[in-house]
Image (cartoon, rainbow, N blue to C red; front, side, top):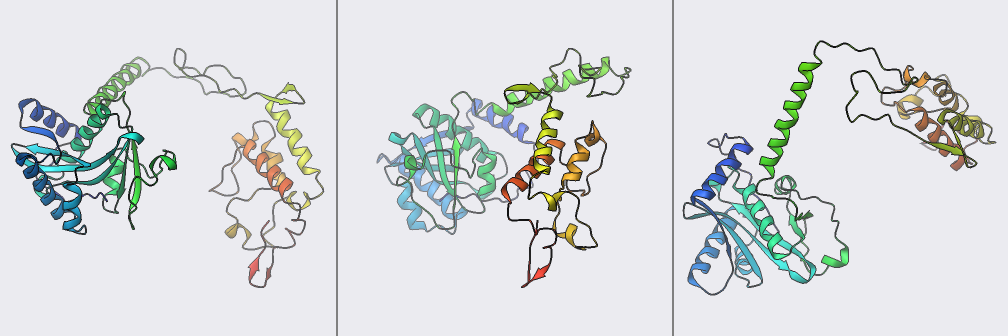
Length: 357
């Protein structure tokens, strides 16, 4: 189960972008290297694996040392070592399942003296680039509570999109761990993604400043949705008026007519009488304390009047449904609740329970 030590390093006050630039420069100058290490029996490889085992043991004290040694030295596992100025300062150990095109991360840690300097992020990005070369499409890991935040920043999510039969039985379950997944995109350059995002941000900011300078003195009249068309000041932009097409009995009709027809059908239903008007607080004093998002057909009818929903304030501050949502809610409530004819009069306390409409 992977974990991460989240210590605080006061010496590291650089921004993430500055750290990425520093790492890229260190890699070009040879001070920072990322080396793939396997248990091939060579002394150099074994020394590197033992160094990473020591980092894992210190940063993951809840993991047994014997268990860490067994996985790190397992020939079916591969490790990616982060080497700064000749010293291993971090690493990630994973097991590749080639037939299933995914890899399971077993351990990921950075030494305490080199944390909060961006090595963990750089290490994970290097691993993703290495996975692209090995044909790995997904990364899976069981993260403990301390590591979930780190893996989420690295693009992992709790929702596993791979089919269950693709990974079930290939990885070991861990009690108390959260299974997380990261999809590897072959079109993304993970080592330069932050630089690309910064360039895009600057380009957008420059365009916004240029456009703002040109239109700084311009004043435009308000936009009236009833009149339609392109609002003043948005000509030449990518703005498009939203269009909603409705049809009844195979013929196109305006949205307002369609909603009115639905409301009329709902309001004349035999079981719609409890929902015709709002509940009176004299009948149920605490009704609006319990029902935070009330709706009734009278409110729907008022909001369906021309443009009324643009100006009226909903009864509940936490509820601001559009006329479409109101009509849909009322229709669904009435159509599916044929046994609620006693809803209004049934707002009572009986046997310690409340019946809500």
